Image 1 (cartoon, rainbow, N blue to C red):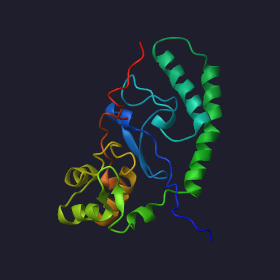
Image 2 (tube, rainbow, N blue to C red):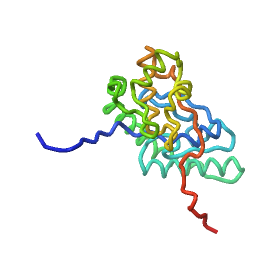
Image 3 (spheres, rainbow, N blue to C red):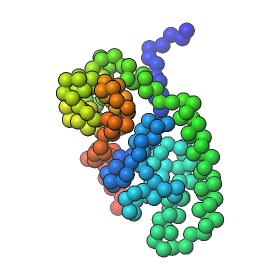
Image 4 (cartoon, one colour):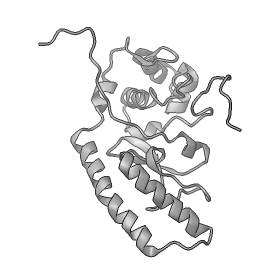
Length: 208
C-alpha cells in the first residue's frame, strides 16, 4: 500500500480526427480502438479529393510512424500532382510502416480501452469537465428524452460543447449512452467536429 492523495489512470489515446471531419472525410468504426477513424488508402489519401492524412490526424501509431506516414502522404500528393516519385521510395516507406501498424494493433488488443469502466461510472461522476455534465445526466437524456445518438444527447445535455469540443468526454460519453440505450457502441455515432479545433487566445499574433 502506498499513501497518496490521488491516482491518475490512462484510458488510452485517441486520434485527433476533427480536421478530417470538418473536411467531410468518410469515417469507419474501428472495433479494436473503439473509435471512429477517417478512411484512407495505404498512402494517406482520404475520401475527400485533395485531403491527405497522416500521424495522429488519422490514427495513433507513434512518432516514428507519424513521420513515415507523413512522407507517404507527401509522396502521394506529389504523384497526384503529376510529379515523379520513385516506386522504390513508396515501397520502402510502406514496408517500414507495416510492422508499426501491427505493433499498435497488438497494443490495442493487449491493453484495450476499458469500456466497462466508462459504462459503469456512478451517476455523480463528471464526464464532461468543460460543462460539468455527469454520467447520470447522460443516462437521463437517454431514458427520459429518448436521445438515440451522441449528437442528440449533446443537444439535450451540452456534452461536448465546451472548449475541448468533445475530444476528452466524447469516448466516455458514447460508452455511457450506448450502455443506457442497450445498443452497440457504433449505433450511437460520434460527435460531429466543430471549429475551432484548438481554441487560441485573441492575443496570439501570426508570424509575418
